[in-house]
Length: 379
Ligand code: GLA
Image 1 (cartoon, rainbow, N blue to C red):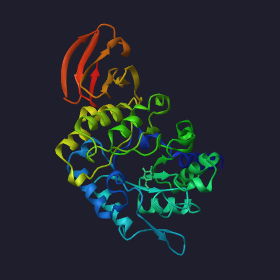
Image 2: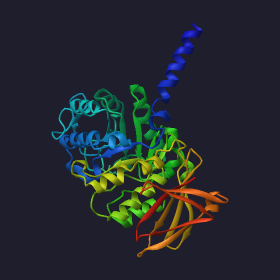
Image 3: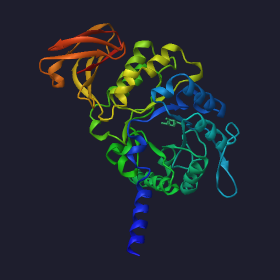
């Protein structure tokens, strides 16, 4: 009898902690999300072609695994209250099976409020039912977006509201990555892990503009104590390839995000991507900084006007360093090796060029273009 009680207790513990299980997001989640490019126009066909692209263009090999449907898939509810997909999506199970058939995982989106941010059916009052439906369809990831919950709940109840969905997900017994989206309200990084959050947005929405992207990215300094394996700060999805920034600006975007150990969710139309965009999001040396198993989020270590130096310690003892020029003309930027704890000389590798540059003592200096970045690994 004692043994039985023990087994039941152990099983219920495993069930309760499943969605908070850090193995689900041991490194920052990587994949694609429909919102930044398709917004509300997204269809099941767009999602299928994103999965096709990821599976065939090198993104899957580079680690991009989640194919995430954002807002605007929702239809109404049936007479039993079960959520339906709208006509653009039709048979969700078939779509999920298609994406799984490519060796990928798939994500879905909802809100704790009665309506999503785009005004579609949310999960308010149907949390258990929706969690079960996502699990039955076979989803692997849920982005849960505050939206109209603001009108229903006082902010003081936000923790409980997110916990309620987490507990419902856990009860499905399907491992589902839980992505909190409430724009950083209530200093979510302090309580995100306690509600099983694997990632949480730290800001309002990104746009495909250098000014917005850079304000968000460079503002993340100070949040590094709150990120780690299983639970990550999320400065929002990538805009690389959407056309609103130039090459150097997209390089800055990607360089910052990997140093921040941010989730890497491509937000462009993968079926119409230029080789240049693909090379930015799939550069192995660059992605490896983001996915480093030590799971430390980088931080600013030096700044002089618009010139910034950021560093992220890596598992092998080396340090990834970003040299950023937020100014309006090309400028040399210097890393003092002592700022990353190196006395004497160190080997430097340029990660964008994928080239070893040799040994440097005391410091390393490079010219960085306007709005551009250089990413090196110092050993
Ligand atoms: C909010 C979120 C976005 C996106 C939209 C969808 O604005 O922050 O990332 O999910 O809602 O309506």
